[in-house]
Amino acid sequence: MFVEDTLPIIITFIVYLLGMLALGLIAYKMTDNLSDYVLGGRRLSAGVAALSAGASDMSSWLLLGLPGALYASGLVEAWIAIGLAIGAVINWMFVAGRLRAYTEVANDSITLPDFFENRFKDRSRSLRIVSAVLILIFFTFYTSSGLVGGAILFESSFGMDQTLALWVGAIVIISYTFLGGFLAVSWTDFVQGILMFLALIIIPVVAIFDLGGIGPTFDAVRSVDPANMQLFSGVGFIGVISLLGWGLGYFGQPHIIVRFMAIRSMKELPKAQTIGIGWVLLSMTGAVFTGLVGIAYFADQPLDNPETIFLSFTQVLFHPVVAGVLLAAVLAAIMSTVDSQLLVSSSALAEDFYKGFLRKNASQKELVMVGRFGVLAIAGIALILAQDPDSTVLDLVAYAWAGLGATFGPLVLLSLFWKRMTRNGALAGMISGGATVLLWVQVEAGGIFDLYELVPGFIISALMIVIFSYIGPGPTAEMEADFEKARAMNKGN
Image 1 (cartoon, rainbow, N blue to C red):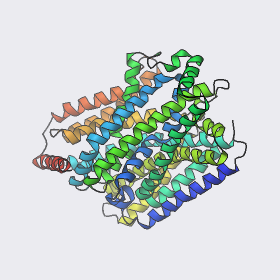
Image 2: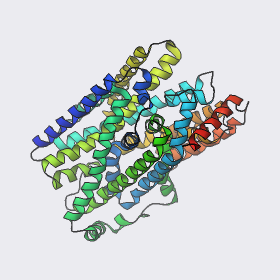
Image 3: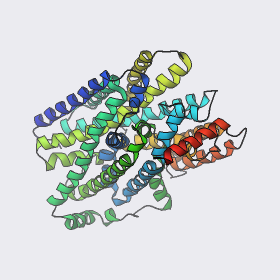
C-alpha cells in the first residue's frame, strides 16, 4: 500500500530533516567539553527533559511495534502498555529526583558508569568497565531496532530498498548526534516527542470517526474475532507477568534516566514529572487504540506486516501533506531513540574507556572527538545487525530492554534507596542480571520456559545485590555521608 503522490511527503521529510540538522549545528556551537557533549551541562528545562525522555524511551516501538502487536493479537497485548505505564510513573515519581541529586553529590557524575564508581568509591574501576561493556552490548542491539524501524518506514512509504532505507535514516541521525551531542539530541527529541504525541492522538480519533464512532468500531473489531476485545484471551498467569514485566525495564535504561541527571535544577522536577507522566500515559493509550482500530479498519484487506499499521493509516486517512507530517513522526520516534543510544554508548567509550584507562589526562576537545567517532563505530555495528531480513522492531527492543533492565534496574534502585549496598553487591548484581538475560533467551528458545527474560533477570540481580552486599566490608563513612546528603537534597525539593 503506497501513497499515490509521494512528492508532498518527500518535501515534508526533507524540511523536517533539515530542521533536525540545523538544531545539531546550533548545539555544536554550544558544546565545549565532555560534560556538554554527554549531559548538556545539566541545563535542560522541565519540558525538554520530560519530552526528550519520553521520545527517547518509546522510539519506533511506540508507533510500529506496539500498534502492530495489538493489530496482530488484540487487546491482550495491552498488558505491555499497562506494565510500561506503571514503570514510567514509578520512574518519574521515585527515581528521577533522587538520581538527579545523587549524581551531583557523587562527584558530579555525568554517565551511569561514572555514577556507580563514585557512589561506591570503587578504586578498582571494575564497576565502570563492566557497566560500560554491558551498555555497549545491549545498546548495539537496541540501536539496530531503530534502524529496522526506519527501513520499515521507507519501504512502506516509498517502496525503497531496505538497505538504502537503512543508510538514509542512519546518515541523518548520525550527523546531528555526531555534531551536537546531548543538546542536539535533547532539543530534537523535544520536537519529536510533540510530533509523536500528536500523531498517536490524531490517527485513532480520525479512524474511529471514519468508522462511525467508538461503539461501531469496537463492534467491528469483535466481528473479526471476539477475542480481540478480551484482555485475558489466550494468556495465562505467566503470560500476564511476562507482559507486565516490561515495566521493570524502566529503571535500568541509561538513555532515559540520563535525562533525570540533566535537569537544570531540582526545582524543575515537579513540572517535568507532570509533563513526562502525562505524555507517556496519553501516547501509549493512542498506540493501543491505533492497533485495535486497525483490526476493524483493515478487516477486508489485512496487512502483511502488522508493524505497518500506523503507516497504513497515515496513507489512507490523510492528504499527502498531512501524511508527510505524520510519517515524519515515525521517523522522529526512530531518531529520538537511536540518537540517545548512540550518545550513551559513545559516552561510555570516551569517558569510561578512553579517559578511564587509556588517556587519563586527555583534553576536553580530545574526549569530545573520541565520543563523536564512537558514534560512528557503534552505528556501523548496529547497521550490520539491522541487515538481518528477519529482524523485527519488537523482538530487538524486547531483547535490549530486558538486558539493560536486568543489568542496571535493581542496581539503580537499590543504590538510590539502600544505604547498606556495597560495591561487591553492585558488581554481582550487574553481572548476574546481564548473564541471566543472555542465558534465559537460549533456554526460552528451547521451549522450556515461556517467561520474559527481564523478570528472572531482574529478580536474580536484586537477590545477588543483597547477598553480596553482606559479604565483605560494609559501606564506608564517606559513602553513608553522600547517601544522606543526596536524600536531604531530594527532600528539600
